[in-house]
Length: 241
Image (cartoon, rainbow, N blue to C red; front, side, top):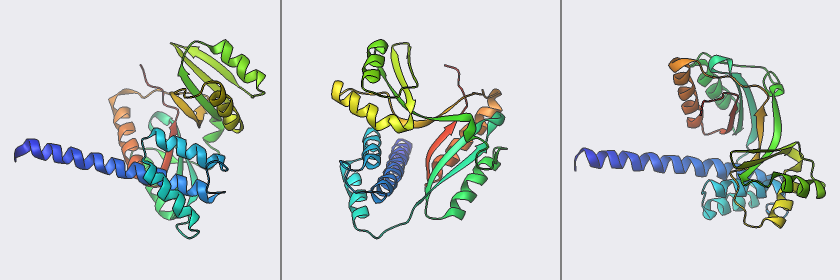
């Protein structure tokens, strides 16, 4: 069938593998969230948040249902959350959040990834103190003053509201995520958000220096993406627009 067929087949296989990995990632996160409390998103805010995030990644309802049903079964894998702090290209600072059923496997994979790009793992606390753990919600609009008054009047603890290039971004403590979302959903039902999560926001940034650093960054991200135990990756690298 020729080279064109081979290229299409390889592309389809790669797409299928990426989809499978995405389903596995969110299936694991939803399973853990369901096991940590009541396996009902109406009663378990952490589970509700994971389901919303999975849906935004276009994870199917069937994958979500299977993960919850698995948690309801009572017996299954035992996943432990683990966090690694590391230094990468140009002394950038990284936080790697994982869910694993094998500590040694995960530790080896993360350590190897950073070692191959000239980086290294650090002790707990060596990086995280340079980040703020925050709720970040952003959307297209220009009603920053209106939003501030709404959240303030609803007793929401908001760190900051910024408006830039037609984008409104709300920053708040992690503990305020559910409260703020309830207020927004009540006042702006069906509103679409560009960002809607809790995340680690760096207090300082670095830039990559030259093509060599960029190659290291690309390789590191590829290796972390290939590790099934990795759930989230945060770094303080700032890229030019």
